Image 1 (cartoon, rainbow, N blue to C red):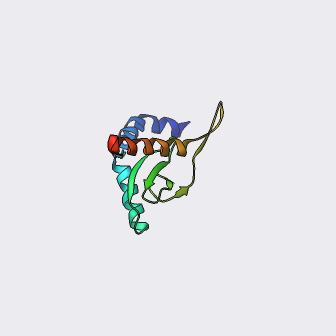
Image 2: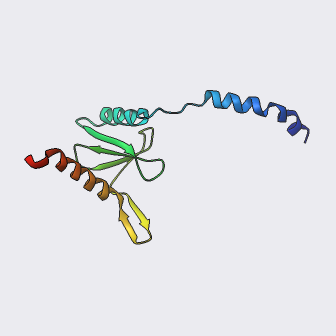
Image 3: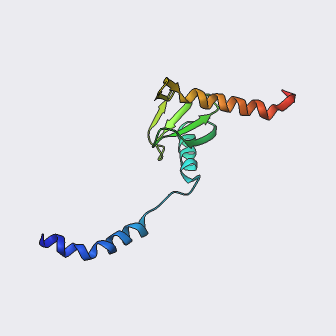
Length: 114
């Protein structure tokens, strides 16, 4: 009880110091870090897009090899394969939905010329 009473008046100062020292990544900073780290680690890899995944804590990386790579925000851990989600209607392939969206975008870029 004595220790609690001693530190209680200091709590606002501690919280203010923590908030001042906190670092929040700017939009695009995490994605750029991931892209830089992976292209340095995998020769020949060309990354077309990095975005937050629907799965909290993961990022999706789209590249020239056609595989979707999932990575942590620091780019340290990688997973490959499809991300599946349990829904009220069964299992949804989130990765395939993303690939379908990218294919549609590519087709739209060609327009009537394709």
